[in-house]
Amino acid sequence: MSAGVVQVAGEVIANRRVGAYHHLTLVAPGVAELAHPGQFVALAVGGPTSANLLRRCFSIHKVKPSGTYGGTVDVVVAAHGPGTQWLTGLSAHDAVDVVGPLGRPFPLPAEPVACVLVGGGYGSAPLFWLAEALRERGCHVEMVLGAASEDRLFGVVEARRSADGVTVTTDDGSAGRRGWVSDVLGDVVDRTSAGVVYACGPMGMLRSVTDVARAHGAVAQVAVEESMACGVGVCMTCVMPVTGNDGVTRMVRSCVEGPVFRGDRVRWDAIEGGITRVPDDALGAPRPGGH
Amino acid sequence: MADMTTVLAGVELPNPVMTASGCAANGQELHRFFPVSELGAFVTKTVMKDPRSGRATPRMAETASGMLNSIGLQGPGIDVFCEKDLPWLAEQGARVLVSVAGNTAEEFGEVVQRLVASPAWSCVVGVEANISCPNVANRGLVFACDPVSSERVVQIVRTRVPDGVPVFAKLTPDVTDIVAIADAALRAGADGLTMINTLLGIVIDTDLLRPQLAGTTGGLSGPAVRPVAVRAIWQVVSAMRAGTVPTAPVIGVGGVRTGKDALELVAAGACAVQVGTATFNDPHAPRRVLTELEAEVTRHGVTRFADLVGIAHERMVTL
Ligand SMILES: Cc1cc2nc3c(=O)[nH]c(=O)nc-3n(C[C@H](O)[C@H](O)[C@H](O)COP(=O)(O)OP(=O)(O)OC[C@H]3O[C@@H](n4cnc5c(N)ncnc54)[C@H](O)[C@@H]3O)c2cc1C
Ligand SMILES: Cc1cc2nc3c(=O)[nH]c(=O)nc-3n(C[C@H](O)[C@H](O)[C@H](O)COP(=O)(O)O)c2cc1C
Ligand code: FES
Image (cartoon, rainbow over all chains, first blue to last red; front, side, top):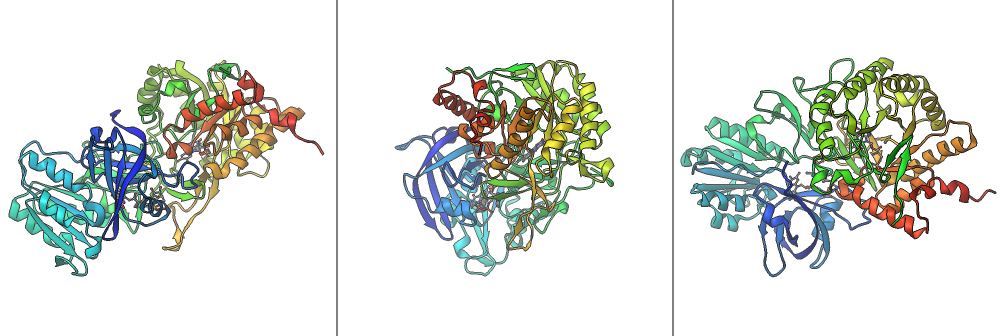
């Protein structure tokens, strides 16, 4: 386990609205130097006496090691429940406690292979600096961004800067092609002879990305989003059934062993309707008549 | 500087602050934030005989000043624990309170037997029997809800743990009379008690109109339960002071987020305090609570932490 994580009293320096989301820049000295694409931060919400004790996790959108303000971290937040509403309501100079960077980053290919980066909604947030890291290694990078509607797409303009090609889809056709990212992904993989597909977004999307990648001969690396209470590996709430190199399925913590997993290792068969079951063949699965 | 040492059934600890079982894994994750050896003791995640996958997810729901969890005692099993986790804690110089459980009373005994045989056993300062878990042999009824089951587990564990290493029974507050269970555990040979485990609860998802946890029910923890912990400690310690229950050390746990919170449990009679759910909010919480508790001891003008243990019983206004 790496020691590369810090807890810092952060400060908001910018909070701007971007479509349906809020793009927050936080001063959080020490995080940037340690962070890699695919990792996340866990933010405390509501201040020191908050009744919302659990941390909220967000993919790191970008980092700046130092500058006028000291190191900064950017996140893209969709307002949803009380924690994300509190965060999106913050103003410049407000305090936010930051723990990060957390989790395992996207693994980068050793060879300069073509890659397709797929983002669903705010799931595109961590993909831009991944694209830069891949292009630095000589990889051809294409992006596929999808969302329910145009306001829920994030970073289309930035994508055109960070990638060699961009395809956009929306469920309602308000931008790009009408449909899902999985409808266009196969063609992009074939056209670019991509070896790796990186994806971040809702679980259902990650599952279809995994299927399409497999069918078109690419490896999928997916960043999952499981409900997390601590983000640092101590509570065991964030587990997912994942098959290891030894062929054994275990309920592993997505905050420390993930959030990035090889798509074909995730037991999608156990995930449905907002519930993840423990597969019967998982290590230590409940047995009839007791545990 | 206040003297923060505390003595638990003959074992002296440099300070009274501990992690709570299941809220700190087995140390490596929190060690990235502070050295685990700085705590009075490190309490491990409850370990059972075999590896356990735990329950389906969602396993947690946030509640006002707390949370529900239904982890289902996920863990690697006692053999892997003895091979990997305990030696790591020993290497860090941590004093370890090992939390154990079994599906049956006999299984508690097997777990303890393997634990005692571990080469790293010498870092163990106590065994916490988590009797707030279901007894498979008794229709899944929680051991600690029944005095007879509680006694059986404690007897078996006590005979397998060498003399000089105390055994603590961890009680659930979900009983009609916690004093009766405390009495049964102590008379069966427990050297001390840990109070409290979580309280059973249900959260309904108001969008899906179904229970939010995949396992329907979960254990409530966090600051929301602190008054229940203080009450449980108070009742049992009152009975000890009245001589109706054998006198023994109590480790307090439930809703501690700050040094002041810890002091409440201490003033009610706890001679050590565990920090659980607050760790999810602040990974430094157990270490920070120690610093804050030291400041509280100084603020009250006493030189020894031990002078504050149970003090509220003496200051209580009798009507
Ligand atoms: C690795 C990772 C990266 C993420 N990246 C982003 C991002 O870039 N932008 C963004 O807007 N959201 C992201 N999320 C989702 C975000 O964490 C949740 O939307 C947020 O925690 C919900 O908080 P709330 O107060 O609005 O909701 P509540 O329902 O009040 O949250 C209650 C509790 O449940 C947890 N929780 C609820 N929903 C989720 C969820 N979908 N995922 C994880 N935990 C959840 C919260 O952490 C909190 O502990 C990410 C989640 C993970 C795990
Ligand atoms: C996620 C989680 C997991 C827990 N796992 C265990 C466990 O394995 N064994 C145990 O004895 N108690 C377990 N507990 C209970 C705590 O140790 C503690 O008794 C309880 O949460 C009250 O303290 P708190 O309010 O400080 O969290 C767990 C609590 C939580 C929140
Ligand atoms: S979120 Fe707590 S262990 Fe992963």
